[in-house]
Image (cartoon, rainbow, N blue to C red; front, side, top):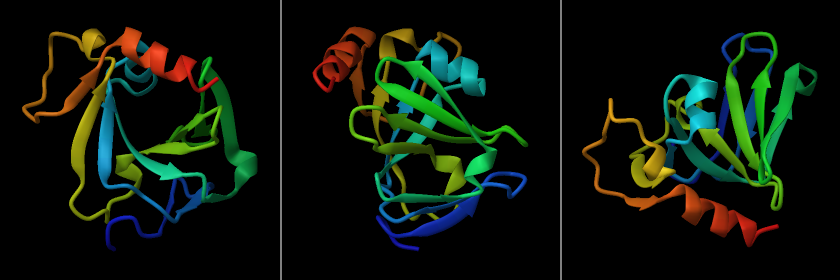
Length: 141
């Protein structure tokens, strides 16, 4: 697979199948409390745009987790499937769903001021604080 190309993947149990046609290998890491509670650690996510197709949609449960985003997961196996922006419909999906993504690069860390003291990354990236994120997404509404 090459960067920004289509990949077909599924949740752990296979009930939900996904085809994402534009996967950006420049991934982000979110340290917010919601992401850490949802997955037990930071969310590593790739942008997949709006051209994402799902099979087995009856197995997807959604939760509006913030004023600007909705999260989706498989209600059978619990696999985290997406973080979708409410204003644009753009999908951010866990990078772990895409095992054949070539040369992924961490480019941004969100909610850097909420990153716990018990981990850090050596990657040099851009960072945005909670206030910066809220200001940015407030402009999208």
